[in-house]
Length: 337
Image (cartoon, rainbow, N blue to C red; front, side):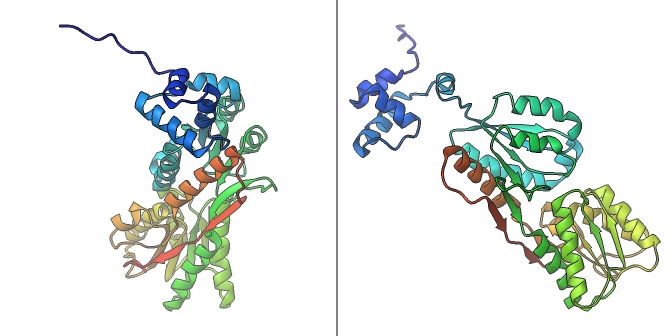
């Protein structure tokens, strides 16, 4: 049996010969330059496809000082990252866009304890830019990262600078709408389980809750921090119940905390949705898994991830882009409120 010799990878010179253009024209096409005629562009693309040409990324990186890699930085511990459906949704949106681009994505789950190692890697020329998908005021290494490479934040940074790029959801409006929803159903004794006070999302959702109550001359019967975790939501609900009579309704600033609140309510003999109205925030898979199903504020986490990735790609390509994008929320009505 005769075996044909294995053929090596196609070279840029072979692509140029097949397309009938110069080597420099092929290089311009591969690097995304617009200084190529439509006819030459089509010829080069056809030759690349026919020869299954794969650009030499290492050589391109040395020539352009670009790595064609971006970092997705999650400044959280692994329990929080893997336990909160929000991150899965936002990472899926980011991954869709990056997967369609010329970039690869490196993900770093880096709490502040690991900031020195993470910062050294990110500032050492390993990536062209970064997406920071969560942000606490204590995450000072994120500011130092932004001084080294272009960064797009998921959510408003704790300290906004004029050059910052970020994609957020309207947390203030979402908190206000959730509270107004409860007020419109006749509830007057309202409590909230808030997110961490060192995260802008937690701050804004709590402020929206307070604003809606103030508009009708009411004050909350209780405000407790649930740390955006299920255990934190349960503990916060226990503190609310231990302080006196159960509230008529509770705005819980994440679906995960709402699941914890359900547990704590039932421990004291209260049935969510019947004895105490509960509204969450996220519209994650948690909301529909609960019984009764959770009324919640939908935030478009998947779209937020896509917007963040597109914004960073625009920045890296030098394309004009807005610095800030705020995505709307909406109430999803179910049985809990």
